[in-house]
Length: 105
Image (cartoon, rainbow, N blue to C red):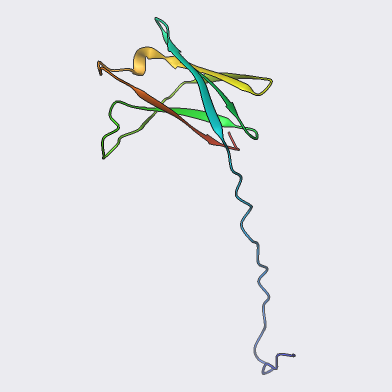
């Protein structure tokens, strides 16, 4: 029905902008190796990805993950090959890697 307002009041309509839909991604790491200067990750993924690698030296709680800076990647026919310098690695006996992604750079 109609809204009856006294003459001195103003009704302001505020448009509702729903949030954008959630975009889900799936990444499958298919390769990992190290050479003398780089760590290499190979993976496939759904949708357009902007991958960002992270690493940890311990998976026991609490887990500290560290973002890898200065990584690069190529994309060819659904396969991403990503690399970064081994200089980020400390003297830990093990490393664990994961890839975080968004749909914006």
